[in-house]
Image 1 (tube, rainbow, N blue to C red):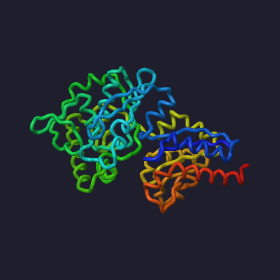
Image 2 (cartoon, one colour):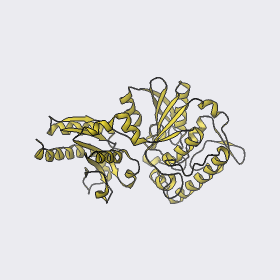
Image 3 (cartoon, helix red, strand yellow):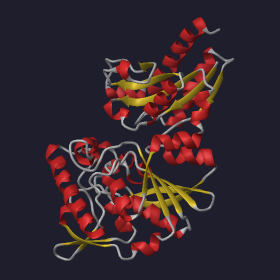
Image 4 (cartoon, rainbow, N blue to C red):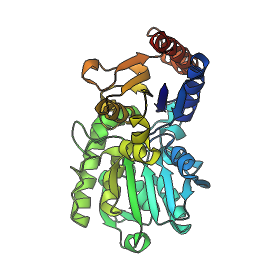
Length: 375
């Protein structure tokens, strides 16, 4: 048999590359004669830059920047073919740069991302591929734009660095120097969601609770995003509120679309193209993917769903191994089967700590079942 394994990361537990290695080794333990093709995946979040670097022989450039709450932080970007910068927001200033007790949806911003972009510009990069998953902030990407020289002015005439809490204080935006800086540059945003900026499916109401926001803070963030988006419309003529995917990374996609003329891409489809997954799946007997938590959000742009959807169209079986399955209408999904690797009665902490062990065990058991009918 030919098996294609395309794991996504188990958040806070296993990277996509680690999951791929575990699955590959566990499968060969039981079925050593099979051919296993390993293609770790991402949809714009954790692991985005490494996966592209591995595929395209990139070089990591380390930069001192700031995490989501402004603390000094080492990050960087991957340089490919001398002029392309691959940047992962999650690595620059995402939730992974903070201890959970330091999540702060109001004070967090994307300034650290802007610092990395600015350095890549100075290094001569002209093409920017930015993965926008795993963000900690809800600032429309304005923190990053401030690092690129855009000035945000309050009603009192003071310049501020935007974050989720102070967007409503901005009265004017001076982006007069930006056009020269980005002239001849191209920005592509890999997003893992299709959410728009505002409303019940928008950046604040859908994602801010995951970043530590309570209901009062979510309402404030929604108001502030609305205020800032109206100001952007007045200053640029661009309507950011209803752009598909504009709600990604706390509205960073919408802000970059407005000021950097960035193209918003489906991160899953982009990765599938780069990794040659369509061709790999076409010739596979079985496809295995993973996701830390399978929920309704997984059905809105996440890579495992995109892979299963393509596999189903090609009449290939796609099996998902997940840390937690929170989807009820399984029969309506393109996955042939979904297996939860963690026992249902254990704590989240124990499940996270034992994900590697439980994934290995689950693959062993599944491979044994396959061996009953496929010697």
